[in-house]
Length: 350
Image (tube, rainbow, N blue to C red; front, side):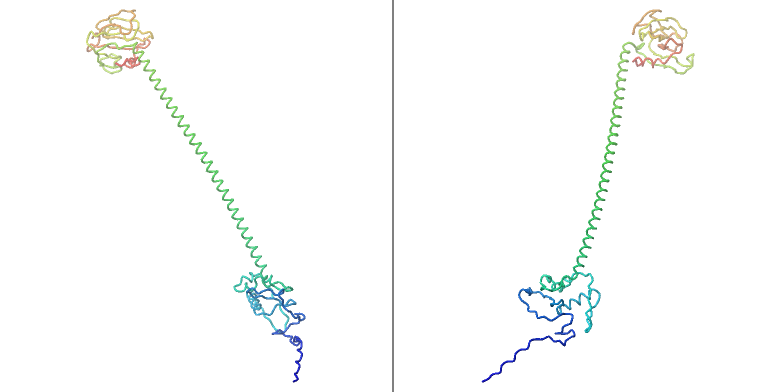
């Protein structure tokens, strides 16, 4: 049985009549059509992600995914791209935007596309927005550098302020230490001066006491068992001068009268209102008058020593009772001084 031979298959010829951009169509600017047989070397494994490749001749593959991404990029740029059939293609310029890879669910489509794109293709779409990212990164770096510089300046100023404050505190501490040292020195000097003055005063008192003690050995009171009845300067009509010129030691008649200090008897006898009087002149010229005596035991020109008996207490002359009237005349002058003060200077205390 004869069989008909199958007719030979005609080679595939692209539709030359299709000039419009549509399914299966081709634009004149795409270049001559060439059959592309992918091989293992030109086509890498998908690795679970979508890959977008370009046709030979520089045109993008017509894919709904690519068109969607283009629409998203165009909308994000603030404009809407439109495709009109029968017109030349309009180029779309994308402004500096964040990387397309940062868009949710889109960046994964372009990951590693630069490495996975076939040979002869143009720059991968994943490079779109790199300049924007680099610009943002550069701006961020510049801002960070400015911030670091400002912080460094602030820290430097703070260090300077703290250094000045520390210097001021140290200067104040030094000044305070100086003031404290000066104050302590003044106090120490004042204490030393006070101690010195006190020591000098004590030494003076001690010397005076020693001197008075030595004088006390050289001087003695004129009588004993007495009572002071009238003092020097006491006013009254009983005295012709209008005031008392001596110191009265009231004692019983006949009480012994002693020489207060060594000297020479220059007068001894009656003296009117003074009664019986003895004048004893000391070596320094001071005259001691012993008045109203009941009796005189020495004569003129006689040398006597301290404590020698020169007479006895009496009531002769202008008196109201027995007593010893003592006067002191420095340098033999007519006007006498207070006998009480003079006796105390000699270490005696009537």
